[in-house]
Amino acid sequence: MNILIISLLPSILLLIVAFFLHRKKKPFASRSEGLKIEQLNTIWRDLSKDLDAILKTDINSLRNENLIMKSQFLKVIRETQSMKNQMISLEKQLCKTSYDTNKILKELRRIAIYIQDNQRQNNSQ
Image (cartoon, rainbow, N blue to C red; front, side, top):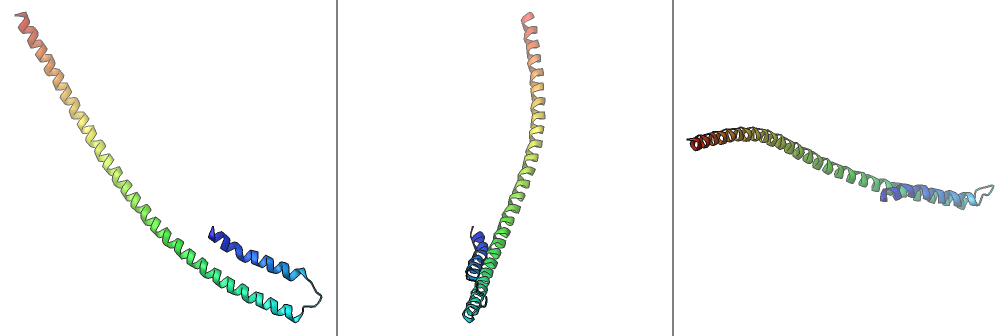
């Protein structure tokens, strides 16, 4: 918002100066008007220098903020990649664990069937 105000300020000032200069048009410019124009030019130059300094400061500030944000962004990207690698590793472990669990369940079923068969044989004797 400040940058917008700072960038519009010279235009508004120039508009006001132009309004007052062209409001009272005389066929010949007097010496006092020439002095006023010189004073306005001096004021305009000073304002321009001040605005230039302010804008340069703001630009440098924004550059520094941009560097900080870039650094933070790169850090987040690295953390995200690390988490992605961890998830891939966990998925592999899950697949292996599922495979092992299924293998154990299959053996337990086989044992349960064996026990049932033994119990039937014992009951039939």
